[in-house]
Amino acid sequence: MTSKSHVALIAEQIGSTVMSDTDLWVNRFTVKSSSTSSTYTVAQRKGDGVWGCSCRGWINHRKCKHLTDVLHRLSELSTKEGFDRAAIEILVSARAAYLDLRDPTPVAAPKVTAPTLDL
Image (tube, rainbow, N blue to C red; front, side):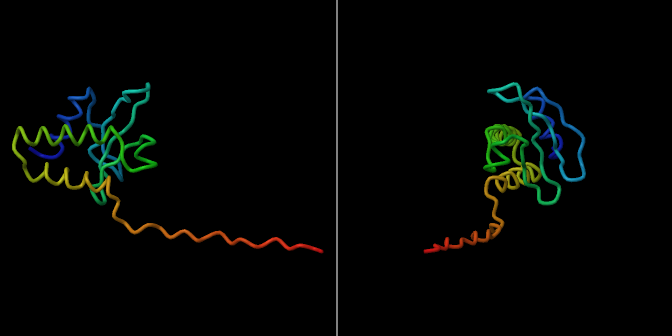
């Protein structure tokens, strides 16, 4: 089973369908929020295979319940059908979405000048 078919099965499980790929993202599908009426897009980045979500949790903290659910479903699906190379690659890349191993971007400390007192 290819990674596309794994993704299609997961999308079907949650009532979604696989969306077309973009220049930057593949394996795209929508996920409905469990707490609001919002709908988010879950996808895998072409360049490095990292999974992402369009929700605020992933954007701000690089983790969210939507990806957790999708990855859990993927691991269950792969366990039932036997792990193949495509499934293992998806799970390995998905883990990287939570552990952004890039060096943090240095931030310059603000320059603070002491106030002068005119006595």
